[in-house]
Image (cartoon, rainbow, N blue to C red; front, side):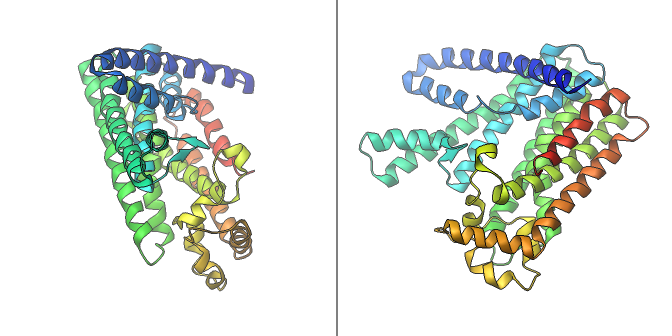
Amino acid sequence: MDGSDLLSVSLARQAQVDVVLERFFSLAKNRAAAFGEQYVQLWNTLEQNTIGGKRFRPRMVMAAYQSLGGDDLEAAAYVGAAFELLHTALIVHDDVIDHDFVRRGVANISGSYRDAAAARGSSREVAEHSGISAAVIAGDLALFNSYRLIDRSGVSDVVRSRLLEVMDDALFASAAGELIDVDYSNAEDVPRVDDILTMARLKTAVYSFECPLQAGAILAGASEEVITTLGDFGREIGIAYQLVDDLLGVFGKEAETGKTTIGDLREGKRTVMISYATSTAEWDSIAPLIGKHDLSDDEAQAVRDVLTSCGAKSFAEGLARYYANRALARLAEPHIPPALRVELHPVVDAVLGRVK
């Protein structure tokens, strides 16, 4: 398939997942109406937080499924939607942990309810508590119902049991990674590069790549060998993805990424770049700026300049390429069908292409 064919297939898959999610939210809102307008509004807000995303995790499910010969696209769309709802739950709770009220430049669930409370005259403290409380509830609903979508996929009991195990693996690993991230944010010393890579794998790679790909393979009835190798591929490309994401968090263009390039520096986020920089002679010049809550644009640029000159930026870029190449090596395994290679090779290209 050429580029236009791949885009057409991707859009068709996304449309199928969108239909499942629209149906799910419509039923949920009808059910919520019996409990009052406020509950319906919470479901509306949660639904809005699923709209506009790239549907990346459902695409992984359906890419593996179809390239391995699966033809029950409705079942695959339900499984893909389950991973999208899991992603929504995790980012809603992640924003609560980070005390963030904005995502992609607009108010998230916490921010929406905080602003509504403030408009009613609540103090800042009360308004923020209202926003965080609503987000916790919404995240809980998304998390629970991600499992329910697997139940509604119509697959056999044996397949459903395997899919639920994969979902459980995704959530279990992500929670571990989130906890490590919280611990690192409060630690005085910057973790080693290897430790940060482990966190990235647990927090992001498992639920974003490893498990969705394996779920698609399980649904298609693939061999255990293929399922295992897809997990290996997902681990490697997932780590590369997070490395690139951290690079874009400092050096990206906000108009393209929708993410500020100063937030990670103000937060003092523990990334591979920061870990590498601590071992260089130039670290002392930027150490007081990492985690500075009122970091100015000029100070942020000074940090970027040092991360570049000390080699931290190029080190992270090289590491991303290294893990991407490891992912490609998994696709070269003889038991991987050619159609699956054709499907997933562009994923590697897209991950690395984000830093060009």
